[in-house]
Image 1 (cartoon, one colour):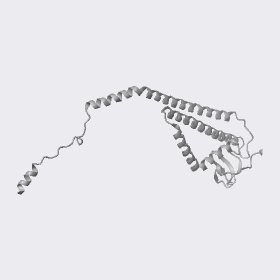
Image 2 (cartoon, rainbow, N blue to C red; image 1 turned 120 degrees about the vertical axis):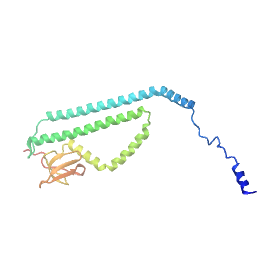
Image 3 (cartoon, helix red, strand yellow; image 1 turned 45 degrees about the horizontal axis):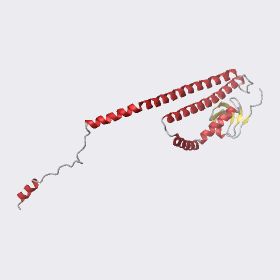
Image 4 (cartoon, rainbow, N blue to C red; image 1 turned 60 degrees about the horizontal axis):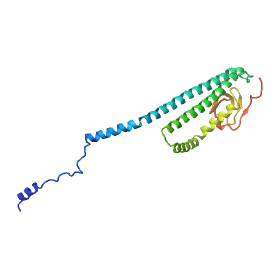
Length: 228
């Protein structure tokens, strides 16, 4: 067979037609209408449920916010009243009445800060659990995960937690205050500020010592029990 005949035969071979599976399916207007109808039906059936959940969540958040503000203000007013009604006591050797006023002020502020933080944590934590419960979320896995995360965070921040708790008990027990001369083991001097985490001391040469409350294993108060 000659070459022109071969080329002619090849050119006359019909090309394969695309199969039905290769043809892209285009959604019809009827399919779109059915989808829209199903969506509208779902919204109509469930809108009342979602509206009730939304109102419940909003109510929880509003009550939690108002309760938090009221309790924090009540604690602040209580601390201020304690400061106003506290009777003056004998001062220390280097400050008299002003030292006692500053001592009571710092102590009451520290106690008020602890109470406000605890109240906020309890209120907002309870509100968060109630919101999750409103969405029918299983709280058991979340609480388990939170427990594991809390242990990990507590282990990593154990020094900070120790300092904080030690400061709380030092303030509540009134182990020392502003103006006292103390020997804290790691440093000694006059107390110029008592915080929840750190106590500031002024040394004999005027230097300022920042002593972490968790590092204080013993305290010798050279001013407590002596009158001026």
